[in-house]
Image 1 (cartoon, one colour):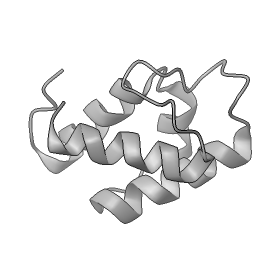
Image 2: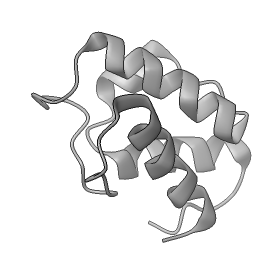
Image 3: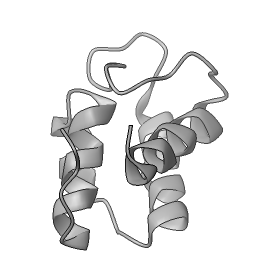
Length: 81
């Protein structure tokens, strides 16, 4: 796991209070996450990485790995995925 991926995982953990989060954790169709959790995830990702994540990205990213790939692309760095 890259440093950026670890930041994204930590952001999701911090935003949701769940400890069992990894790159394969589903963001869409996840009974543990509601729309407020997705907003919190977006805010926490921005805080930890400096990359603004749109609502559209949060609604379409299926996994934490997808979200990490988006952030890596915006930062201009390979995501390692």
